[in-house]
Image 1: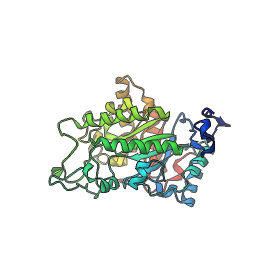
Image 2: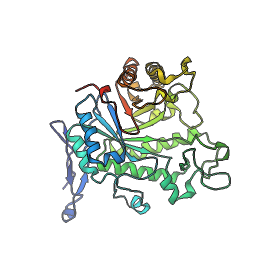
Image 3: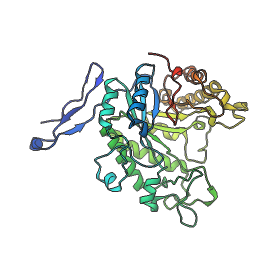
Image 4: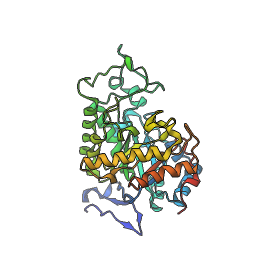
Length: 362
């Protein structure tokens, strides 16, 4: 018996099952995910793994998406703790004990979202990973005395040049696709920047190869290893990668990431820009100006790189920092995206308490 064809009915994603061979007819059927197609204009909100595993809260967010212009959700698969949010079948991940199973019904959740034609994106926080470091400190970013280094929040990092860890990220990505996620989104794909940078050392990075080259090799690795999955890959970058041509001392350069990802998500949160940016005393108070300037610059850079600006899908802020972000402030960011010639955006609030009036009714 050959592999069953993937299919859609009435615009809703379905799950199909297949047997690997005639000899395997007595074996349990293997689940093969079917994916919702990328919306022409992605309009997404972020959902933590804890919220995704909490019935009432996630239902409230699903209702928000289903009743508004929103059409996508970004769900944590691996967050800043390094824990994987659902139980996987991969033997290495299982042996490592990385799964915390915060989302006990991941298959049912994704199927429900697909039935509503909601596009589901897996967020994988990469080099910020205290759990992996706790099991394998030999791959950690170190202090000069050989102890494990921590950033200003007390979080430990994996050395971005540790290729054994790249393989682990690839396994998590494959398990995410197998669970039904429609897109694989990679965050914290950078070198650390906050903390005692004078007391930092690397066992795997030779400190001669430019950081941006290390990350470009990692991006190429992801594309090479995951291309066969048939789902889009996306990357979260610092907002200032749209306007800075250096690597911001973290290894991120827009043109180095662009060839390897289907979508690029600059985090253009106005509150994260320094005083004086485009002559603004407090950029947080000027959401339209910051987002429009940043995304217009990104559009021009991708055109110069012979790429397509349609790859750009910025993260916008739906949280108060530096200014009160009500519906008007949030809509100004969206309008700035549209006025820069783009159509897609994703909205971030770490607490998942979104300003519902900011999202137009469906």
